[in-house]
Image (tube, rainbow, N blue to C red; front, side, top):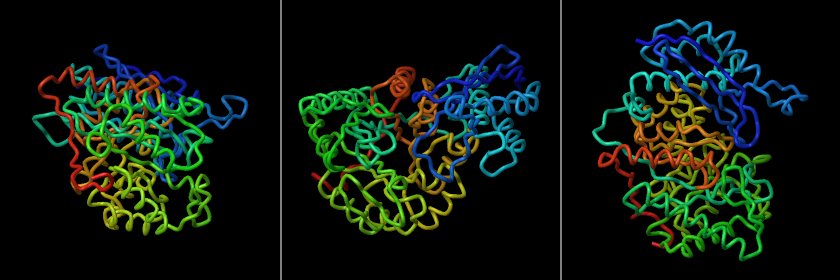
Length: 433
């Protein structure tokens, strides 16, 4: 058992220069754990609530002093001095204190900062790496699985205003024996893309997630640039490296139609699925995330029926790491994969519950960062502990992105022969096969 002696919250800045919550939890044995909270730009409407001050005279209304105050005046008095042996005890208490379905009273940002910092303190108190400690909350395994990295090397949508309608164009190096080699391949392709853009007189602008953000005349032009970059870096598209998409379709869904301004076209849900089909037949696409709007269940069902046997069809805004939403998706066969973002649900306990529920229902899952990030590496440890085999943390550029990838390299070193990189069966994928 460990007794919480002190909790110190702090308002800090994320990678977009916006305030977020950081917390330190101290145990009586002198251990200190930390927890940072990221923030999204394209947030799903079913996410837990980030509490902001809305004072226009301070950080343009985005300050988080109200969330900090809730930690100091409500959360800390309820848990300081309490003996715990499991962070879930603290999470349960905070959920009770909040008492709302979306954590709107205390703020998901306040709750999650404490949740992660308590878990971190307990891991350190037990002299365990975070991934080792978290692994005890998942099905036991005699080998750790390092995740395949999904590198977002070309940014659009809300992550790069003025670029493409689609939000993320990712590369996935799948045919490499180690995480380090997969990381190297992704980095070399990223730099090859930068060189191509300069040669074609595009400004080397960078989006929120570290990927390039050129002003292109169509979404498909981004696909062509990725194919060129893979080739120029010396890799084989459709054999060693594949492409993953996150259109973030809720962001371009207006008045019951999907509006792609770069193509100057509008689509129904069925027409957008047909549009994706032309790309899947032409390019080595391995995954489509948020291909339809978060409420277009019929469109999701068709997308999964069309591609689910070969591609990962990943729900992000569709599920928001919420088991109740995931249950609906499973019943409707709306996707075959789930994106996991701890700040969408607001506690580490509920994040783990969502992952274990996905596993129990044979759903794949990917651990994900947010566009407003920080130097914290927690999700890297979570990805290894959970064993889902997929992670995305943006481009191999900008320290708030590379910190997660670098932590995975460190974990690979720590594990030695115990480390195994996740594999992906690409034999059924269409496009360049």
